[in-house]
Amino acid sequence: MKPHLPAGAARRGPYDVYVTPETAGWSHTALRVLDLPAGESHTFDTGGFETVVLPLAGGFTVTCEGEKFDLRGRRSVFTRVTDFAYVPRDSRVTVTGEGRFALPAARCDDRLAPRYGPAEEVPVELRGAGAASRQVTNFCTPEGFPHADRLIACEVLTPGGCWSSFPPHKHDEQTAHESELEEIYYFAVRDGGRGYMRVYGTEERPIDVLAEVRTGDVVLVPHGWHGPAMSPPGHDLYYLNVMAGPSPERAWRITDDPAEAAVRDTWPGLPLDPRLPLTSAQEAP
Image (cartoon, rainbow, N blue to C red; front, side, top):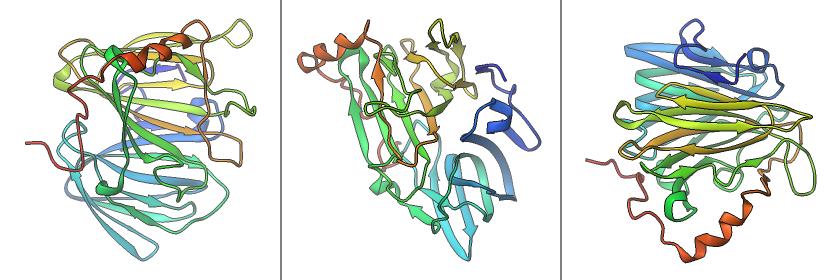
C-alpha cells in the first residue's frame, strides 16, 4: 500500500477507509471509517484488536459485551470534542445511528472491559506557539485514557496558516528515549480546502512523501521523520492520529529531527494562536 492514500483509495466493502496491518504491510495499527445511513446498524468483530468507536459526524449507540453506550457525537470534527466508546479485542460490536465514525484500532494482548469516554473528560492540549500552534485532543493517549493496552490515538486541529507535527520527528526505534510506533494520519479540511503532509526517511530506511491532502485522505508512516502538516490560510486542518507498536509499554516517545529541533526554543517567547482552542466539549453554534 502506498504511503499517501487519496480519499477512496483505501475503500473496501462498506468502509471508506480500510487500513489493517495486512493492507499496510506492517504489524500493529489499523483504522476503518464508515458512513452509516439513518436507521441502519453496522456489526463487526474486533478480533485481536482493541478498538475505539469515534464519531466524526453524527451520534451513535454502541452495544458490546452486554454494555450499551449512547454517544452524543458532533456535527463535524470542527464543532466539538466528542465522546467515544472503547471496545475490547475478541468482541462483537454493533453501532446504530446516522453519520460517520472511525474505528482506530491496535493489535493487543490484554482483553479489557468496554468503557465509555465522556467528551467532558477528554484532555485538550494546546501545543507549540506562533505559526506552530495547534490543538491536540488526547482522547486515547496514555495520559488521557489509561484504559487501553496498546492503542494510542489523538485528534489534532491546526488553524489555517499554521504548521503542526512540527518540528519533524520520528518514533521508529525502541530505545530509552524513543518508542517504535506505526502511525496513521486521517485528514479532514474545513470548507473543502487542502493541506500538505511531509514524511521523509534516511538512506538506510528511505521514505519520501510530500502530499496534498484533502478530506478523507490517509497518510501511513511506517518509519521516518514526519512533519510538518501544513494548513493553508483560510482552511483549518484536522487529522486523526492512530499509533501502536511492539513494546509492551504503551508510551509515545519521539526524537526530533536535529536540523529542526531548535524551533522549540523559540516558543516560550511567542503567543499561542488566539483562535485556539478550536473545539471543546461544548458544541459550537
